[in-house]
Image (tube, rainbow, N blue to C red; front, side, top):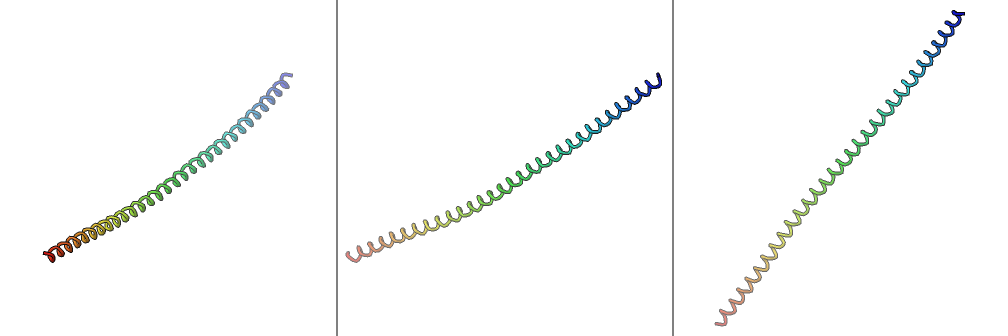
Length: 111
């Protein structure tokens, strides 16, 4: 009877060990799957962040280029405006001088 009891205890211990091993294997597999999923999610997150930063950098570069182009056009417009203003002022001064000379010429003819 003692031998039978020992055999049953051994069988129970064997089944318990097998169940514990199976439970540990399942927990290990789930842990590994969870870690893999977390790694993939983390990688997707960082890839998304990097893509977002790349797009922002590209947008900033384009905006800087547009600002540089606008500044160049403003400088050219200022140059043209200055030239036109100086030309108009010179024409005005020339007409005033011509008017003055014409008036002086008439005054001399009358004297």
